[in-house]
Image (tube, rainbow, N blue to C red; front, side, top):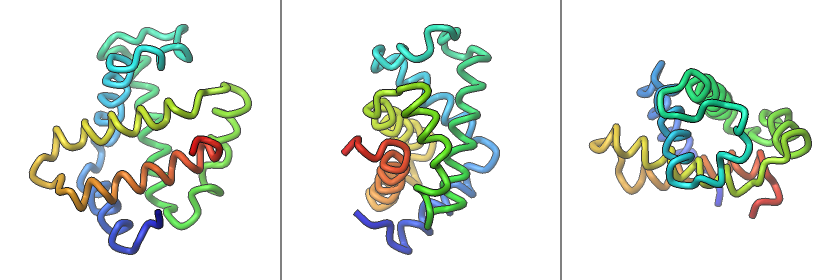
Length: 142
């Protein structure tokens, strides 16, 4: 599953449209993940995971920053995300399936907020992008 030039353009265009709201949507996606897949809370027992909490918002901003970095470096996701991969795999020991669950919830969140833009083609491009990000973060996930 290769990210084509059209996929990259679609992802970049959407990210530009999201602008300063990326953190809002990644936070909502985290909240959805925690509600829909309670096992994902395991890594955050020390945080207040209630919807709207400052700690969930702060982590949502970290996710937004990482995804924006990925969008800015689509041609070298493994290199760009290597420090995050090492942190999540070796120090935090996050189950890689959680990245897939968060990616799914991000797709749902974006489709909810941008129904007119969220064509099957855009969904496919975003799904490929998120799959590449997940593969860069958890290369043994697939």
